[in-house]
Image (tube, rainbow, N blue to C red; front, side, top):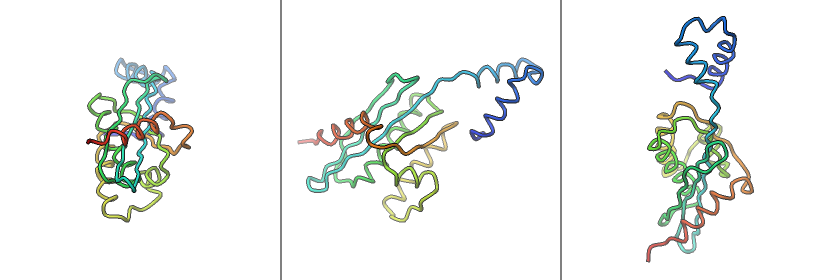
Length: 169
């Protein structure tokens, strides 16, 4: 069973009153819920249609400190495909690192709104990438995805551009 953020907040609020922590299990649950280790992942994709090169990048931080980053080359992808690929790669790294609660930030409004269900996914190539991302998100315990402006996503942006430069000779 997975709880959404509203359910978690309500449970945490209820257990904040000691009279409802009637046993050790509930007391330990409240302690776990009270630990605030904020883990964020910033992702980005970069593509140049003229040179048919693309790159992805991402950075994972815990309590504001970088714990992992990636920068990789993609061959012949659109910018939107690169954005989705960055999300997918980042989710795979999170799962490998056993980080199952994450706040995701992307400067791709399209990806954020499609993942959030606000926009439909019409393009077949995008639909396949969308489905991969949704499947991986299903393996997490809790996640949020938020659109940010490029200025708030500078590290991931640089990593994606660097990945695009890694074109194999």
